[in-house]
Length: 190
Figure (cartoon, rainbow, N blue to C red):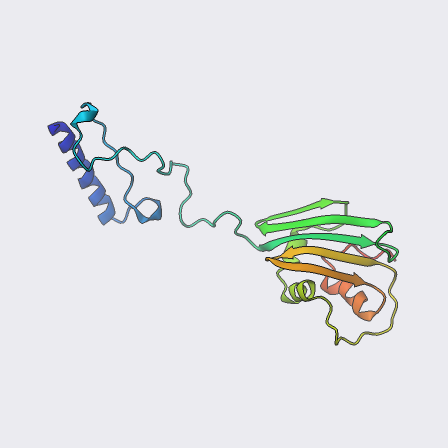
């Protein structure tokens, strides 16, 4: 028992010195210190505790690293159905964009778009507003026809529902397709 107390006292002195020097374990706690003793379990004194098996191992990350999912992208799960002849029963492409912090994933039909650029586009306030709020009712648009393309975008963006349509039947739709939402939609067919 005496050897055990000497070992514990030594370990406490080391822990105190480490704390005084600013060396602490993750979560600003003193490093997990356990003593081994060759005494029988019935020689324990009240207040003794078992070693903490849930302590972080040497592969734990430091506090300066970003948490899982942190990064340049918002949280988004969008499905884009882009049709070439203006009807939602026509030929075209359907793909899904998933963004989470530092991960951008594009699945479905092959399109000439980059998942990274698509997710970065979702950080733009005007793009976010357009996707979440839809097309503004009071917007005046030229009666210029740009083509039969139609895109339906559904899903969620940072917890907000997205359910909007973009077409190229007027000047506003043409500008949205090639400008504002140009990194989310495939290039027009004509």
